Image 1 (cartoon, rainbow, N blue to C red):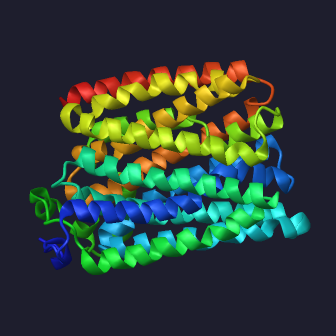
Image 2 (tube, one colour):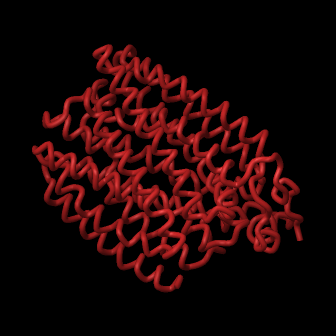
Length: 423
């Protein structure tokens, strides 16, 4: 049996679990100011350098797909090498660097669109690098606080940054009349996120004792067969596709992927309402900030409910997602704003609870791998959903709405089966 690494067994530093969760949330708050500020304006920015609606849909959908699908490998990597902190730092650093560089794209002429798309995809790659490792660390942090509440508080702080980032971009756009200065200013919260992460690592590098199942399950998967000649690649392959994870986990992943496919990227939504003249480009960050505020409130409201009632809370999400396209693709401002609120609420419920539910479905030593597999399946949904939404949002809104409703019906039925079995 491979011994559990010493760093996974002890608490270092004097911070309590709640303080550690909160500081980790502040790291995410600062980083979210950066990449949510970027996501709020990705549609208008790409449009300003020559992108069509389809291009915006493909780039933003591919970005979300990359941020999710690549976790298939980074999750296994984190568990196998026990380098959760290193991957977390590298991922946050990629975000802190790539987003401010978008400020230069309007000055690159014909190359601006290609460079902007590349930076957006690289930033999303950083998200893929850090997320499984970060979520595994947070799942251990939040064991003592209650995982539903721990993930919810972290998500709420995360969403404060998602609220402030777009507001910062809106303020800069109002002051300067152009978009690029706002991206440049995002270098400040990006640097702050790295400083806070270094402090967190120094004061509380490991945030909770190893869980009872960790020692036993540490021999499952890749490490157990790594010593066999020629077994390493085969083991990584099996771990990467999650063949040793429970069937209930895979069904839950499929349900989340269908929900994600229907939950369109804000880039497609904002491109459409700016194109139709419903909202000005300068006001887009304000609309996005509204969605992020709703998302934060939804996360806080459902975290405690998850600890009491489990994954059944997620049954709210598919019906909410089904409503969104019928609201956001209209020419009435109040209905568009209502749709954005529903979009934010659905996103908040899903994002604050799915990781806690995954932690309940899989062994502790396999969580980073499970988060990677889960995110990869979600990423396939995001990629397909982004392309479909981009292709249909301009001239076939009714067809898009029917497709989204059908996907959510299937997602709800699968999720219902998983939650009943979990009970």
